[in-house]
Image 1 (tube, rainbow, N blue to C red):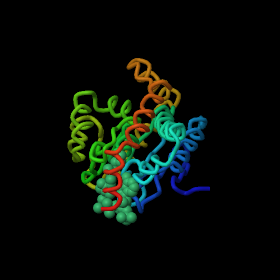
Image 2 (tube, rainbow, N blue to C red; image 1 turned 90 degrees about the vertical axis):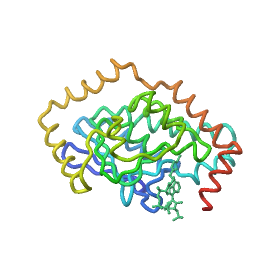
Image 3 (cartoon, protein in one colour; image 1 turned 30 degrees about the horizontal axis):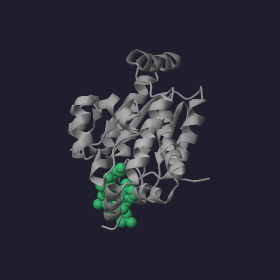
Image 4 (tube, rainbow, N blue to C red; image 1 turned 135 degrees about the horizontal axis):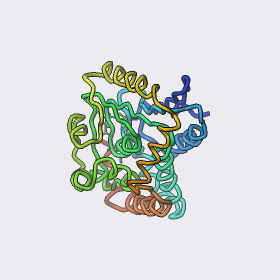
Length: 254
Ligand code: COA
């Protein structure tokens, strides 16, 4: 079994660890499938109340694997769209886990990495963490992550960061509501995480699930299959275009 994403259980807590540190936990098709499968498994566990998402090594996640993005040019249109749809589905599964999800962020959370962060309920970040929607620098767009990022930071900030691709600090991420808790350093963020776990241990697990569902129902922010198909088509189309292919090649050959 692949070890690109690790899953461990400790009492009522599941921890998902992104585990491709050599590429800052950039995710390819195999890793996307694994996250999706593990989310399916966790979603069925009524004895699990909290899911922690974290990254091994220097970063949380540098987003989509750019080799995988570039390879899409060799796929048939159908295969390319299906491959992009798998990413959209994985994000949907993470976003709709019934348990409380907590992202523990350090290092880079760029592109799809910021997307994973946006799919979590609580975000605790180290002060040196770097955020950004750098897709446009590579001729891409934050398509499949778009619905979750928009829900997390709102259209006002999304209009800026989707188009500028600027990197921004953990402080800025905190200011715009993407990060809930900003620690002093990595030890401190683990302290905040422990405190949060102690806090929620006092709660009714059924009520927590019902409270999460209430948020989705009241905000009407369900990401439907139509939206997933639409965003998948957008990324599938743009990543095989000349602008993206040239820029992806330039990044990978740098
Ligand atoms: N996809 C594939 N490989 C990636 C990657 C990605 N998204 N991000 C980093 N890597 C690889 C690099 O190509 C490099 O590989 P190499 O050792 O074979 O040269 C390795 O990870 C280390 O990255 P490097 O850039 O040397 O490390 P760094 O510490 O200087 O910078 C990042 C780390 C994450 C800030 C930088 O790699 C980066 O900006 N990555 C691109 C992130 C991005 O734009 N993501 C959006 C995707 S839509």
